[in-house]
Image (cartoon, rainbow, N blue to C red; front, top):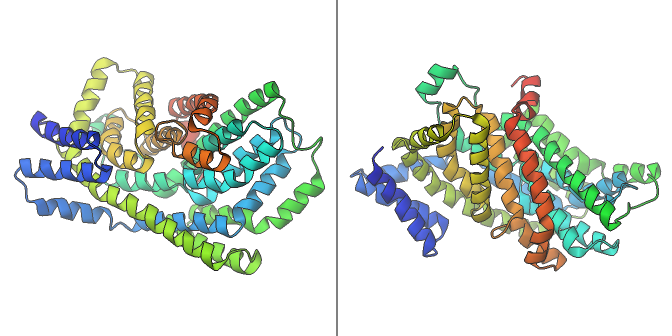
Length: 446
């Protein structure tokens, strides 16, 4: 590893960030400066960057974003919330518990944390306030549960991790020591995210139950109404079929994740226009604006982050970092703890997709050197960065929930701390017990 090249790459990157340059500009200028200092043709920079956005799996990104936005406009998210409320019934803190379940349902069709927070929060935060919940608490649990939108498949961050990681082959030294590694694929990541999502949701539900019992937040009803459950299920049958069609098609091999996103769009249009009859022209056009803006931002970051990551690998920075970490300790649990706290710190300050694109070329080769399964690594990375949605100063879900509920960011952040703690406990369980992630893909033959 040439230290000078690393100083140029990281020095330029952090200097530009400090003076307020957008992360895309910081990545691109730092990578270009490094290419010029190496005396290489800058055309190679452009060719690598262009190749990064010409990937077929990347087509799933705008399609899933559009599908999620259309589902909210088509009334699908509202029906999923109604179903979650009916099943919550008399449970202590039932409305807040229904919020967690609703985020799981909507996460299974949106793939985005802020989109899940917005879709569920628009309905649940006012409902919790009307039922006597503290408005800040309602906003906090919605923001915290919104992170499930990127853990429960389909997940946009998992698509990005898969695209970033599939081009990184295990180092020969790692193969020599541990043998052949499992292949990395987006469908396998999707399947692997189901059980970790359930673990995180379970921890959130436990903390909500304890807090709700202390504060006296009662259930929605005195007992479960099977008539109400039956009615909401019948009314929301087409909404519940959405995640079944999307995920079932992927796992059965009927279509790829990219194709499933297109199927989701057409299914949503069919339901919204002909069955629910709630999808109107102007809201549909706004979903196109949202999709264009989010996709353009992500592709620009990916364009420059790919070159940045390629330079890191070529200069053997991951191998150097792995050597330093192993020099501190060879205990895999201690190494996981260091990586988790590092990811949590990064998630507080950096947008999730940008962080994945920058860190994957660094972390994945390190974990290969330690014998870790790439799918397990991807799930831990996504789960750790998802917690950043609910932690300031970036905390996108906090801003969405604050805008809906009207509580200050400071108040929501404080009341979200117990949920962040629960999510971190769940994250350590997922990291320390790889079978939480790997059991289901193995059962399904991946």
